[in-house]
Figure 1 (cartoon, rainbow, N blue to C red):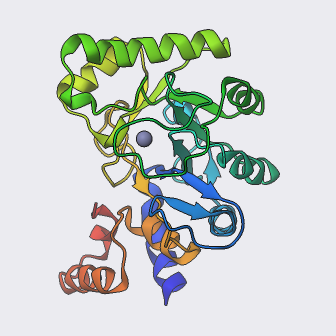
Figure 2: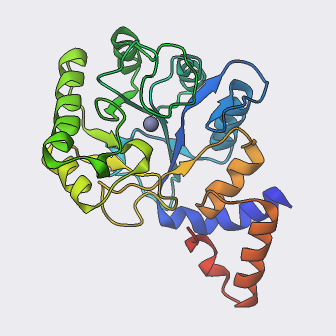
Length: 273
Ligand SMILES: [Zn+2]
C-alpha cells in the first residue's frame, strides 16, 4: 500500500521539481533518539538507500537552479543539515559512500563549541569546528550560513539583522577560503524584510522550513523544505517525498487522498503542501 501509493504519485511529483529535506542531529546506531529533530544513523542510511533506489539524484542547495538536467527525467532531492552537529560526520560518511552530496548550515559564532543559543534542546556535544567544515567542503559538500548566533531573524532590528547575515557569511568565507552562497533562516523564521536582507547580504539561496516543493514560490530566497523527525522511517520519508508535506500520518494521508480522489482529480494530488 505504502509503496504502491508512493509510486503512483512519484510520477506526477517529478514534474514539480526538487524537494529539500532538513535534518539536524544524526545519532550513531539504530536506537531512536529522544530529541524529535534527531534521527538514528540506521534510519538515515535507510533514507539514503530509499532516495537512491527511487532514482533521485542529490545536489547542493547552491546548485538547485544551476543544473541543466532535465527535471522531468531526473528527480532531485537536496539533503540539508541545520546547526552543524558533530554527529553529522557519520552522516557525511554515509553520503560519501553512496556518492551523494548535501549542504550544511552552520553558525559562525558557535563553531566547535557547545550550542549556546536560547531554548536549545539538542545534543550538547561541541558543534562542528572549522577544520571539520573545511574537510566536509573538501569532500564536495556545501557549507552555508545559519547566522552568527541562531537568533530569530524576524525579531531583530535592521542593524542586528544585517550583522547576522553579513558577518556570518564573511567570517565563514574567511575561514573556509571559499564563497558562501546559501543561508538557512534559524527557527525557519523569515518575512519579506529578512528575505531582502539575505538578498542584500549576497546570498543566492535561502531555505525556510515551510513545507512543499522546493521552488514552488519561484524565489531562491524562499526555498521550501521538508522537516525530518526521529520517527521518520523510510516509509514515512516515502510519503513526505510523495506528498511534499510534513504531516503524512496514514489517517491524514487517507483523508486527503479520499477528498482528492472524490474530486476525481488525481492530477491535483502532489499540490498539497
Ligand atoms: Zn537551527
